[in-house]
Image (cartoon, rainbow, N blue to C red; front, side, top):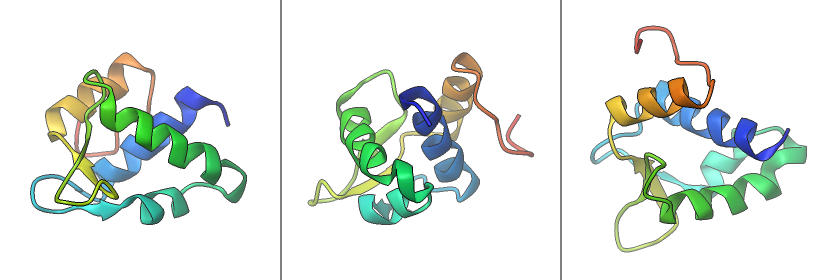
Length: 91
């Protein structure tokens, strides 16, 4: 898996599990959703995505280890722009 594919997979999973608003997940939990060979790179990409204003993933809470989507709409737009799979019911 390459970088853009991992980014799309992370956002797809966060969207499918509705990790928005007060619902948050730890970075470790999110990386465990990826195949084992992509987990190390996935953690690096999550940390990069948190600081990128063009990606709908944001850090949440006092700890930088919690992430969530900025909004459902921005996640759907991101996936459409980057040829990701929008989960059923969100399109």
